[in-house]
Amino acid sequence: MTGPRILAVSGSLRTQGFNRKLLDLAVTHARSLGAEVDVVDLKALGLPLYDGDVEAAGLPPPVLELRERLGKAQGLLISSPEYNSSIPGGLKNAIDWVSRPPGRLFHDKWAAMMGTSPGVFGTARMQPHLRQVLSSVGALVLNTQVHLPKAAEAFTPDGKLKDEARQKEVETLVGALVSKLKG
Ligand code: FNR
Image (cartoon, rainbow, N blue to C red; front, side):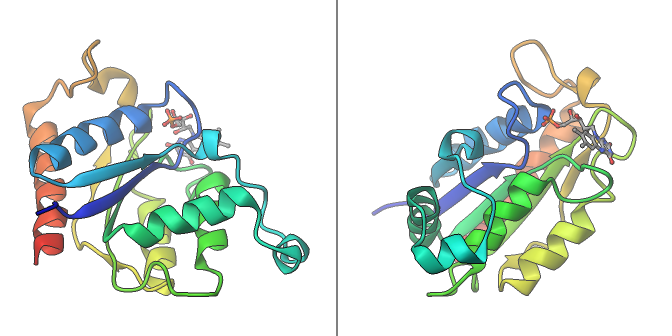
């Protein structure tokens, strides 16, 4: 018997990004609950910018790969910064590519949103935008989310969250996602 399959992605391409750290914590917890988690590295994947002419000529290999990996997943876990109060272009571009036919790869998949930034907003202004986009492609976005302000002070040197209440928030969100997928 296998656990629920989750695709995890950081909306920041930065290798040492705070959102990768937050995602790592969530992934560790999801695995401890029995989920199988596939972590997509958008930088390594190297998606081109969405372009209808490129699409018409045949989906590029990174797009096919992302579509296949999302196709195998039952749920989504995203940790993303906000850029100018909204969704980073790299993440939006990935969603746009995968939203195209054939298939409805996001449809009826549960999604959990998290995000962190060095400022006080902690991605709270971006998350309604991401919720709207994910909902419009058919995902079922959990009604709770995590936004973590002051990212530069939030993590211990070994990548844990200093504030136990924040750690608990992450674990509760991931627990809710895994429960939905175990249904
Ligand atoms: C930012 N950043 C930012 N932060 C924020 O809290 N609100 C914002 O609107 C923006 N806007 C913004 C635009 C652009 C183009 C960049 C590059 C950055 C700062 C951002 O939160 C910070 O760089 C984070 O550390 C990025 O996340 P990672 O890479 O650490 O996960």
